[in-house]
Length: 112
Image (cartoon, rainbow, N blue to C red; front, side, top):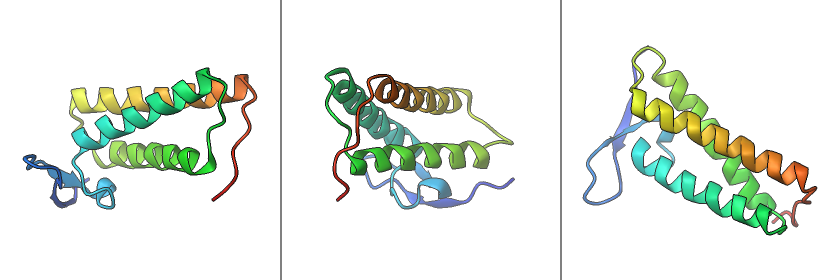
């Protein structure tokens, strides 16, 4: 499978290539993962505090998961072990947020 490149990362001074699965994000995989881990950490903190996770944040986390699955699929023939490990760790973290929310019976906030 050939990986399609969507341009260069919008973060300065980064000049990494953007995989097609992250074209809408306009960031390279490394920066996407950094940002996604921050979003997961914030959601997990909300969950631990018993605060509801609003629908917009939940939708963003689901979008992150889909982007990672798509990226894993794009790189299936030539995975980079460190990147693959971080992507799988992110998926596990997203699953943990879901489990925490379900365990604490946290209701979703209003849809915006």
